[in-house]
Image (cartoon, rainbow, N blue to C red; front, top):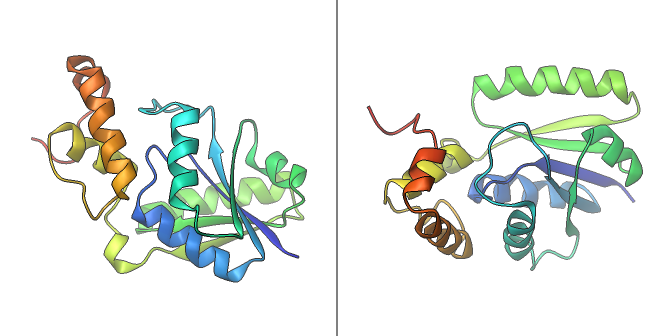
Length: 175
């Protein structure tokens, strides 16, 4: 049985992530969607909130499980006795970052392979950052994220109020 790990922050999960995960689940016997608990970037949702959203997104997929982790991804992969790290590629910029990461992971864990899947065309422009910015600015994210994530974004920004606007950097859609 081949186990693969699809790591990410998933802040929030969107249809681009779901596309990669469901396609990977067709290639491997078991896919672990690994929610990184302590990334260096500022997060909108807590680890528990992200886990809940990701679990809801994959509840209908029997060979996909969802777990959180911290530390090195390759150490989590080893701990789970997986052999593959799955990553998604949208644009050429992603390739450069993923290539560097794959080489570093190969140096740390030569027995682990990285498999990159090209995001489907309809999801190529989606990123968690631009989804957060659209939602923060009052735009509609329907069709970009599952309905439960759309609700979570609306509730999170309402709860944060003006603090949310200060906390979120606007880099895509304004100016």
